[in-house]
Each structure stands twice: as structure tokens, then as C-alpha cells.
Length: 247
Image 1: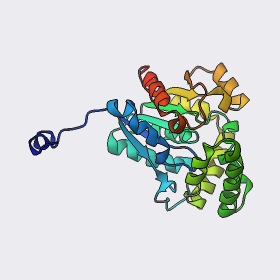
Image 2: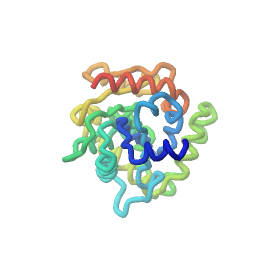
Image 3: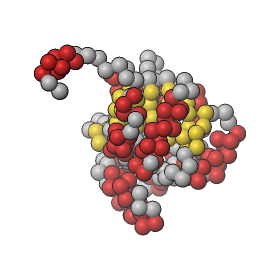
Image 4: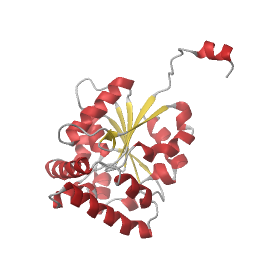
């Protein structure tokens, strides 16, 4: 851009709607890199958000869903964001954030977010371990085995290896407790305008049944893995745009 045009646009406010992008258990904002090359990045400002312990500085206290929801609320306030795309366990975090007083978030696009206790199939296993490093190492070994038949898990495994072991362990324990004490899908429904994006083949039977029995805007992601922002970013961008037209 020439100097004259640079002066012309200096200080011009970017009025595109902002979308916070929050990754699931053990992952970070890099999960959404593929969306930056789609039409969604033209119509919206996409802000991948690294959570404390997962790409951002760990919290001083315990890493819980409530603590992370305060962090997400603060990010939403900072950027005046009304929309969040939340993956997996981050769907709970987003719903708790949207429920906080003075949080500007009004719309949640839940990307295969936790709906029932069965959805904590990764995070919930942390409660079976008494040591954070022991859990992290066992989880990585499990992902190594899964990656042999599902190569997309290799990227996820590599990002989990960068997570803070204590934050990973504490969040996993809290996710299981929350899903025992609450029905995450009900909390999500009450929090904001919600659209649930999913491939039924990726979801536990109980979650699919819950979605069939409860009223929630739903969009099917055919043939998608649990990480559609990685393997099908264009398709996901189309589905997010479709979801946002509902509100």
C-alpha cells in the first residue's frame, strides 16, 4: 500500500464482527489456523484464543472451568466480542463465560462441545491419576496409539505435549466433576444463542440421543473428524456462516 493510502486508512476502525475461537482440551489457538484462509476471515475478525496453560501463561490458582470462563469473558470484554466458536470442553467454558455478568457474548457456535458426561472421554480420564505428569504422559501414549489409525490426531498430540501438565490435569478433573454435577448441554442452552455443529459419528450414543430429544439449533458436519477446522476449514467456515445467519 502506498504512503498516501496508508495515511488514508490509518486509524480506521475495523467494523467486522469479532469471533473468539477457543480450542478444546489440551489444544490451543493453532487449531483454527486453517480458518484464516477462508471467506470467514474476510467477513469477520477471527481471534484464536490461547487459554492459560494452553499457549498462554498458566493461572496462579487452579485451572478450572470457572477460572477459564473468567479469562474468556475478559477477552470478550477486551475485544467487544459477541460471538464465540468453542470446541469440545471449551463449549462448557464458553457457556459459563456467556453466563457471567456483563459478558458481551450472545452467540455460541459449539463445535462438538460437551453435551453429556460421556463427552469428557479425553479430559475426564485425568481424574484417574494422582499426578499431573503421570496423566500427561499416559494421555500422550494413548494419543500415539490413536494416531496410528487416525493421522489427524498427530497434530493434536503434539499440541497437548506443549500444554502445562498441571493445567491439563486440573482442567480434566474439573471437567469430569462438572459433567457429573450438571448436564453440560442444558447449561449451554441457557447461556446464549447456540448452534451445535457436529458429525454424529464422532459423538457418544448418549450425546446423539440427547441432541435428538432436546431443542437446539444443529448443523451436521458430514464426514468430518473431531477437528474440522484442521481437516475441513472451508466446510467449517461455511457452516459457521450458516449458523450465524440464524441470529
